[in-house]
Image (tube, rainbow, N blue to C red; front, side, top):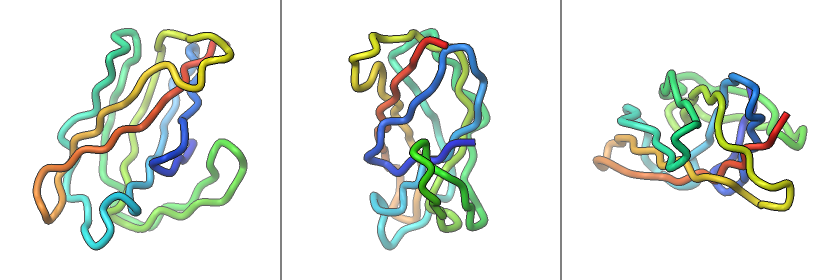
Length: 118
């Protein structure tokens, strides 16, 4: 798995099916995530599956090798596969729109993704 904090660009390789974590703790300070409604992308070739709330503290490493701990109910996990690769110079190639529920109601977050060729 690979972890990313909400403001990082998530690197995904087109030929892989991989699970990812996103830490939304900073974006939802004082609230907890109770459910994931949907994750969408304008990249029709990018398959998104298995969205779930991280219900226990989860430790992993981001794509830069830094240790990250996501507190319970402040992050989500999902799987990405395929996608449309962009140029090597592009900072990102698509954006995930994550719709989720918290104690405050329905909220959204955006995560930039760079889909790279293998």
